[in-house]
Length: 121
Image (tube, rainbow, N blue to C red):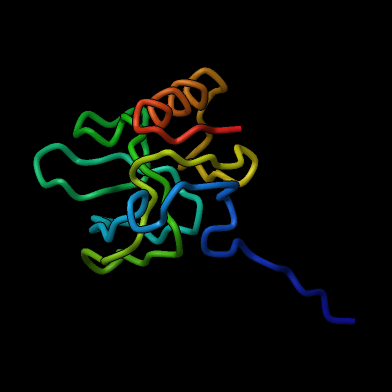
């Protein structure tokens, strides 16, 4: 019997947002193959986004947005949509983090998202 596996859906992490035309923007993802719900950081020099990485020193160490749908920037920059500001509420269990961050690093990312008006529940 074939086993089917369902992946993450675009926006599946979103619980509520005020106005989609306000909370979402088209962004440029700098690198990686990312799935919906990936927590992103903004690279200071270029203004592009990358997967949030607490070990980075380029700006992406600070959580700044949540990727709406899948993005494949493995061969170069890719345009994507992300929730970049609130008011919005997202489901903590549907967020995707690069690597295996410690619980304290995840909580710090949640706080950074709250600074942008994105509440993690």
